[in-house]
Amino acid sequence: MQDLKKLIEAAWEDRNLLNYKEYTDAIETIIERLDKGEIRVVEQIGARWHTNEWIKKAVILYFPIRTMEEVKAGPFTFHDKMKLKTDYKATGVRVVPGASARYGAYLAKGVIMMPSYVNIGAYVDEGTMIDTWATVGSCAQVGKHVHLSGGVGLGGVLEPVQAAPVIIGDNCFLGSRAIVVEGVHVENEAVLGANVVLTASTKIIDVTGSTPVEYKGRVPARSVVIPGSYTKKFPAGDYQVPCALIIGTRKESTDKKTSLNDALRENNVAV
Image 1 (tube, rainbow, N blue to C red):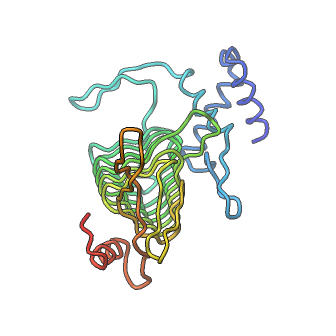
Image 2 (image 1 turned 135 degrees about the vertical axis):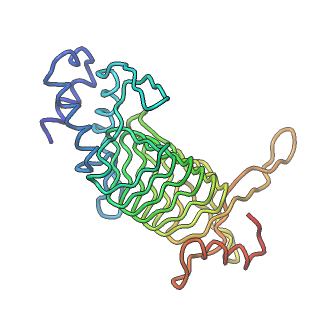
């Protein structure tokens, strides 16, 4: 791996090296290992997630060494330079017609893809459901037994290389049209209601106690989250700005979706 890393770093600094097979072979090897789940763009070291910037560089360098080609699938015609995954049966992944994942994305055994999309560098762990029109962006990391409901969008990130990808922990539930971008980390067993939008600057406010507790870039484990707003002063006046509200915690006795419904009912909130 250290030899591969040296070759990738050298090619990153001098793109002329992409004319030599030794360097393109190194890039191809990294993409193949990403595709098989042998390596990851982001890995957990203790309690901290570490971004392997040199692997992201390999993904970026993969684009210029590919050539555009036309691909036909029944009546559909595509024109692109990236291959698609094809080993679904061998790896135990269910893919409904209309779904696609790029080669270089890892899908573990038991993943189900409704008509949806997973981009290169992403990692989707076992038993996860990617529902209709959901998208998993480049290098996004999704844990085990996650449910991405219809229209969920997980943002991708390739550049800048130091930027952290989106991370969704194990056993999370993301409601319809929820959006998570800019490296936000949704910790294990959290529940996001429909239309929750989380960016790096979004205020995530825990309103379950007597005083609010504010987070940014991270949803604590087992939190139940819904869309909200708060008043912000501007030169032109006071206006409502979107935020996310933590209105409860998942109960041990209930599943992810039931926890969301219970929290909404308890707080008399419709989402």
